[in-house]
Length: 291
Image (cartoon, rainbow, N blue to C red; front, side):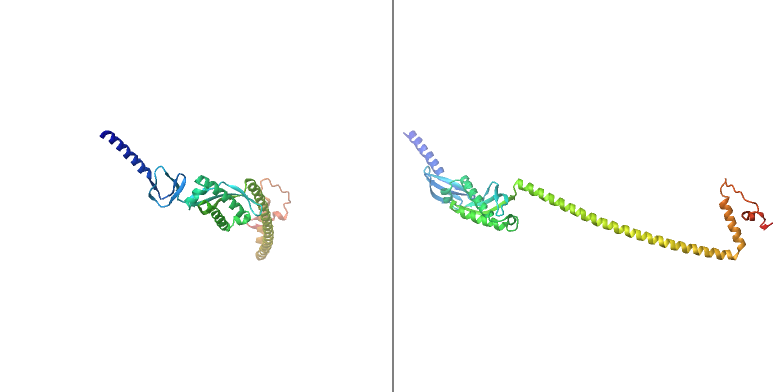
């Protein structure tokens, strides 16, 4: 009798231990939990620690308590000036009301889908009322604040608190970007040609002015050279005349010697002159005395 009783007691203890273990659950700092009883919510636990539930009857659904990020796919939107813009936005949100969140969307996957629709609609409405120049200016922060407030207001029925909405990228579509690039390239080429033409004009003026100054400088230099050369020749003639007047015979002899040197310097010089010619008058001198 003792042995069957011991077996039954052991089974009961094991069952009780399993039930006790399944009655305990832990909520971590980054989590919050909803206790469900046959699928119906009974309690919401947002503080970390050890908690109890009714085994088998009750179940626990865990939700993230941290700040979550939702990265929406890039969407092409039309601005108020009919410009097209590809916007890639992301959203930071937190599950503020776990019970409302569970009752309205149930899971985070469904919540992301609903949140994506809300963010897309709010972004289209807000950007559709402003021109492209505003989106790329300092007013962009104000635009994103308006989008955040709109998304937060529309996401409250989901139990979600939207902390921030930001645009990671706001670019023109590829075909528009290529067209704008070609237009910018054409404009830059036109400006480059204009600058080159202006530079060529300035360069031509500088060269013309330099040529003019060069011509003037050369003319003045030639004039001064001719004046100095004339003054030098006049001074030489004056000095020569004064020297010639001091000793006529010597300078006559000196000029004749210069003439002999110039006329007889070449080896093949041939001259046909009369011996009585004045050119040879100094050849009749012997020891400096004319015969």
